[in-house]
Length: 501
Image (cartoon, rainbow, N blue to C red; front, side, top):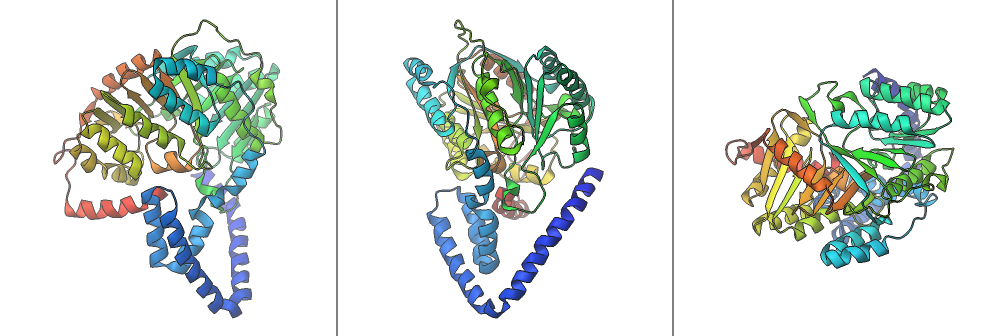
């Protein structure tokens, strides 16, 4: 709480200056108030037509239509400031100045995959075209059913570092986990290893401060916040939710696990914390290195070069299926993971199972879930039993009735909170990453995700899913979740504002 208070105190002068500037502007423009009001009213009508014609999620469009229709002038101003992707321009400029470093195309691998399964290769090619990141032959992957199990391996790999260690996370918080990592990172920095840390300023607003950042620099660890919260600005919504630890372009750890003690159950917040992750080795690691380098170079004063992509030892005998690692971006015309999940549900023949802590689906993805279940696919979703955010949990549960009616099976983890983000389809494809099934992850955040085809990790993920399901209560219509008129009215309002949550 003290960190938040200090941050607010820092921001207050900037916000005060913005308010004074607006008041001064309004005073100066007062003689033209009538003309301005008429112009904004006309503009609000134009925005209504623009929103209707725009290719966007229906829920998001409805939200802005309601705001503008109820308050045309204020609604028009809010839409100009926050409602369209023009507000991403500062982030877009920074990233476009630092494009993804070049890498060998995945065309040859896609052609090989096409001989095995043409429909899957089309999906992988679709994601490649959107993200610029290639499909690779998978060398080695290890699955972790808990952060508790992944953390010791992370420390071991940090100790092995010889050239560089790249750390990028949404949340960093001092404690058993992060303090142990900092000790090792500082020791490696003394040895001459390049150590760089990128964290999301808003995600870590209550857990990490400028004082702690300065301590890292004093230890030889370069640390930079993503999209720092200094002014109230249009880019506030667009956060770096990615999670990756990269060592020497040789190994990467990723998944839902942040760098805080609850993620390894060293601290109890919402019961037992169920999270998952993986360690990836081989050529696919380069995709993660490229992701990090692009973001670091966009926001840091000490750029990385393509040196981090060389000296990679490829295993010509590797044959553990295929992997495509990519990142989501709100700057793209299409929401990559949303498109991917729709693709996977449309291809599912036998089953499609999902882990997610939050369930706020857009119209197209919701329809994909309903269609898959209605045609006989065994669709399951594991959700938390103890929520971390009650209003989000309430919105998530508002989706239960329509899903249950279509035959989707929903389970809630009785031991605590599920933070895992994964899917597995037909013993062929699985995804593991940072992407929640909610509006923020799918449309507003930068995320990272890995898609595996015919890899050994599928068996581990499936076994873990079934074991976790044994620790869940099935949601039973009319029993676990009882619909009522009051709930229906409240849920209706919450669903309208869901894109803001």
